[in-house]
Image (tube, rainbow, N blue to C red; front, side):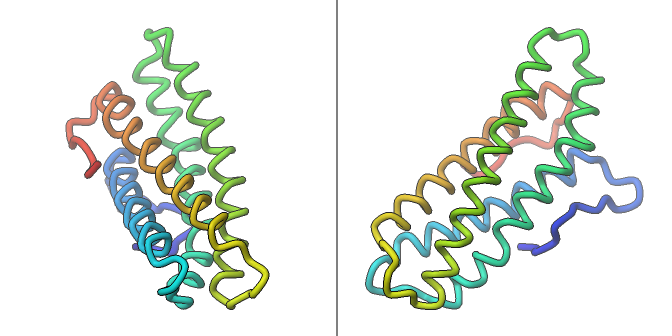
Length: 160
């Protein structure tokens, strides 16, 4: 899993391949968030919480910027004759906005969990974690199973 805030294309690398790699990194982070949720309330690994708090925001923002600046325009051009592509891309942009706001809140909660803040609501953080990683996995599944194949990607699937 990388902590990079931006996705960099290797020379000649296809943006869809880069996005698939970024999706894999995001899914690994979802797995780490699920591990944290499963550890609540007795077996909290504070170091994992701090790592997740540091990685979450930059990763989510970086992947979203790459999608919106590179992938979505490419998809829109390839599928310009399909009337549903712009509403689909707009829906994904809206989900990005929601995910980024949620990631900010979750980052703060993970940091508090990591430093052992005695005033945190463990049950609420558990719900936040599960809500976030489940939404992120659904979003990635939609892009992988519906959007990317429509754009001509034959690399196929994710691991959901």
